Image (cartoon, rainbow, N blue to C red; front, side, top):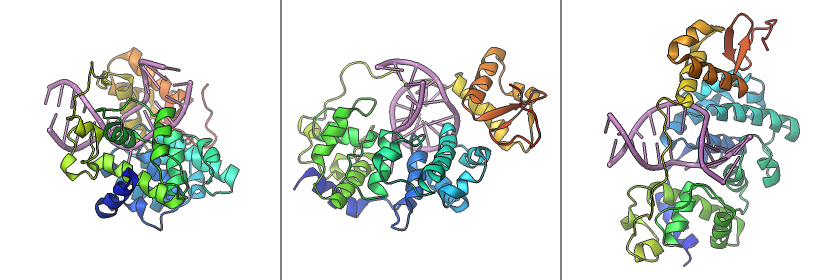
Length: 298
DNA sequence: AAGCCGTGGAG
DNA sequence: TCTCCAAGGCT
């Protein structure tokens, strides 16, 4: 038995019942789930995904609404630029691919917000192709089970793809099952903090376990700070805009943060990123919410 | 190619 | 409380 075989057997008995894994899920549904799951936990994505798919069952449906609606529907999933990119994705899919999510990896990777992981995930999980799909879970599982190291590097490298490729069964459909199984294993058994080795199908062969579960060497990677950063200020500003029905005067936005310099920088950043739009008269709206006939300030 | 980009929950 | 981290992407 190979690692892939063991993982697939384990997955068949232990996989979570997630809505985007239902057999009737469209490629669009898979794409939406993958983008939402970028850095956001499953429990928070699930209800958001259901609402999103009910409102916009196809790329064309989303493309017909302004980006502002996508940003509002995104709610508090975090990193709202993903909502913008998903909207841009829908527009691109309509324009370039007749409204159908493309199946070729190359075309997927050309879509906004679709990177190495997401492109391969859609090609694999929506279309059943054989690609190494490497996310943080897969990196951790392979790193531990194969290399015997406690933790993987911070980002997916070409070497990671090569390593996973070597573990994939030759058959397309089986390879796709192996990929989702490795991910699931990393998500619920071979976790970052307290791995449940007793429940792991690899526990007799895992190189990390066989060498006594050594701790990570050297200084840990410095964690990102959040409190007091521009990201927090952007979040506060956008929160106001999301709930507003009409243009929001700058005076209202000024109340969310004391430091004037940082506040201005955060606001300019949101405009720069295309999340919000300045109107004449010192008012702001979410992108695409400008009242018709309103003159935009440059 | 490090650093930026939100948010909330677990320990 | 505070730290870590959760199916990354982009510059």
